[in-house]
Length: 485
Image 1 (cartoon, one colour):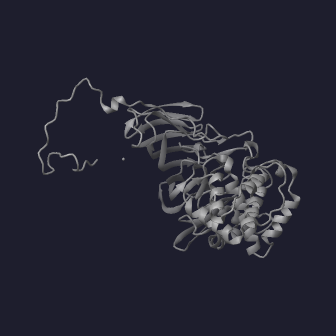
Image 2: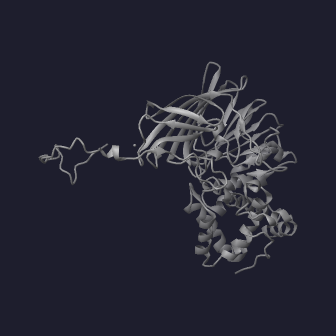
Image 3: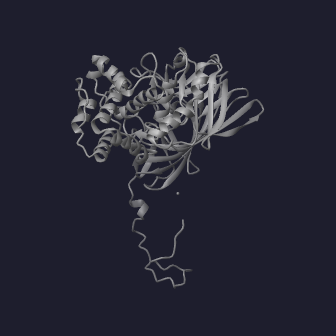
């Protein structure tokens, strides 16, 4: 995420060792089962899944006991009434024996829930939807849950981080936000540790466009409504899902066999936003030369104009930008930042929110690399400026452990970027760029922690880097200027 002007915020039984009838052998005699013996199913103990994923910073975010593989999100939204009707189907695997499981869903009214086609019980506790299947779900088995719901969606308020989620706009709506937003428009395991693939079907009044993540799958109109279809085939963290509904200037194309789809709101005059977003594939190609192959199936960007959105967010495959980033003219720096997140943040996602510097430090450094590539300023010069002028708050706040209040503070971005450069100086360019490419390749479409990044850097460089990372990520004073180890 880039900030602007302040804080933002499931048989077959095969013949084998057991000889069964029809497999070319006589079925052996079997003893008559003892009717008093409990069945294997009866011996199992089932319990509700945890109402949180266990994140130290946000204990209630996400849920435990299952792993989602795919969501199909079908919603109809009418801006005139600000009413949303939805059906979300998720395919998941139980990771524990579940008598019930939770989904995150904020505000909307649940009309029915089914699990594997059978009616399931459901109840609400705040923003937690508790689903009780007709029979227990056995660990290791897959299941399909379907939730039907409706209501007026609303953003989630966070006293520290601001609001995120569904926002009714002047010409439609947008769903956007970090660290949470998805639960305001579909039921979800809302934590980046449970990534999934997605299909979206978004129905809106004819004349409006609905842009979402991934590959455009076409649209169809029936009566006064148009359904827009999108598909993201790579695992995606829930906070990286988005939908933008409104009137846009649309640009389409193809690059390296992948679709390019960008949308700029008609609420701003044609100019800098359009020119900047048009350079998306150029910037992506440069970053690919540094970080390795672009990790997704589509390119693009969305520009929106709403005073409540004063940031850009790396929504997967198609970042969303506030129009404010382009008020002073073309701005490819923010494009470089959000595109860098496609490798670091989107493909390689945090396992826990306290490691957010892995996303933002890398993306900030990508801005510096792009500026040097564009002939604006060398990376070393940018580092020296930041090192000399960073505020005392930046040095007092450890980016590797920023706390919830500073999760998107300047230390995570600026000192995070400086930590990346300190690593480069310490281990040299060859090892450094090998680390970046290896990190993106080995952790592609997965989750990772700071400890894993440090271990990789030490493995690639052959150097002990504990003191370096302790100083730059966890210290509360300005570290000495970096030097080769």
